[in-house]
Amino acid sequence: MVDESQGCLFSGDELQSVRQWRSPLTRRWNMSSVALHQWKSTIAHYQDYQLFRCHHHQPSLWTMDVMTPHVDPVTINPFSLKPETIAFWRLPASDKGDACLYFVIDSNPGGLPFILYIGETCRSHQRWKGEHDCKRYIANYKANHFSCGLQALITIGFWWDAPTDTRWRQQLELALIDRWRSPFNKENWQIWGMPFA
Image 1 (cartoon, rainbow, N blue to C red):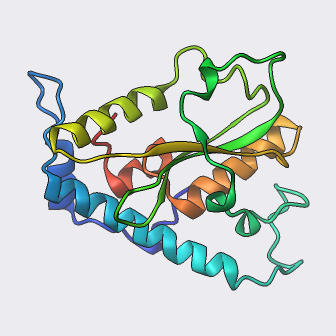
Image 2: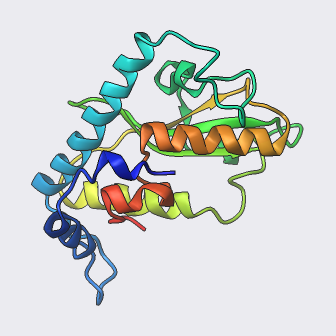
């Protein structure tokens, strides 16, 4: 959930320009390299501040969310996870996988890395095999980079200590989406716009 008391990081005019980046006739993305860099930089700096807070966080029993027992979302550092190829789901697997949280990250050559998407699953090897909106967002994102002559290095990291209980895992996922404000998660579209949806 987005904390309304925080305010929006972009003005109404800036959000309107985000909505206009896509040409309705061509369905191609028109974000300029300057606008794309600004969009990425703003998100990366916000998340870098969250990472700073993560390193200086002292857990308290009084501030623990009762909906996510035994796991304080502030203690999870997505940037410390082993980066895997975003096409992980194409690799052979002997089973359906395990419960986990996953983080789609742009390693952002020349800038700060930042989280694009946060998700959860009970079957890590199966989750992305079918339709997944994030796959389309990534394709649009990479196409925009290519049209600007830029590179995007997209990886995914898995956090395997996620609760096996679906309700607790989904509560933790929502807490992390709120904390990191990952732009591909629909919960944060009102903050960052939805230029790649």
